[in-house]
Amino acid sequence: GYLIRVAEAPGNAAHANNLSNNLWLACLALTTSHYGAVAPLTHYGRAICVVLMSLGPVLLVAAALSLSAALHLSPLELRATATFRRERARFHVRLAAVRIIQFVYRRKEGKTIRIGNHLITTKRQIEESLALLFAALSSAIQDLHEIGATFDSSPRAQNKRNAS
Image 1 (cartoon, one colour):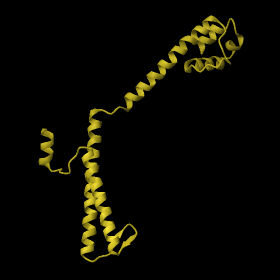
Image 2 (cartoon, rainbow, N blue to C red; image 1 turned 45 degrees about the vertical axis):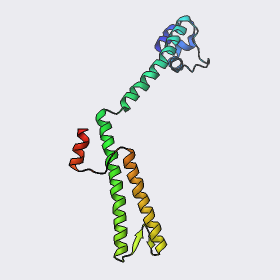
Image 3 (spheres, rainbow, N blue to C red; image 1 turned 135 degrees about the vertical axis):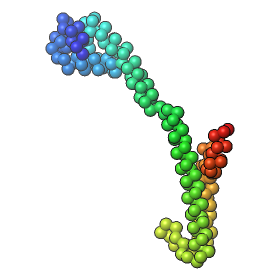
């Protein structure tokens, strides 16, 4: 802005007297969105705007690259994310299995069976509920396999995975 003010002083008093116009002109030049409402009149002012127009995209790319680098995960963060996904998938398999075991136990003991707020009483409701519980277990196991994890989390299985 100040360079434009100095360059435009001899030829254009409006730019020279008002620093906000010069800053506005510099911003327009940096963003390459110049509409012509405010324009430099001297050759030096135009040269400064050309330099600013050339620097605008370069500064934008530099800002985008630095943001991208800041958001990039390190190898340790990638490993932690993969571990979290594996453990979450294993948790969902265990949870689905526990729900099936609870359902079967309650049915065998003659206790009332509730899923959410719904009381399960008829044979058809029991069959549908078991089918849904097994579908949830199947989906959880499929998710576990899709991320390349196994359900066996014993130390022996972990040592085998680490060795290979």
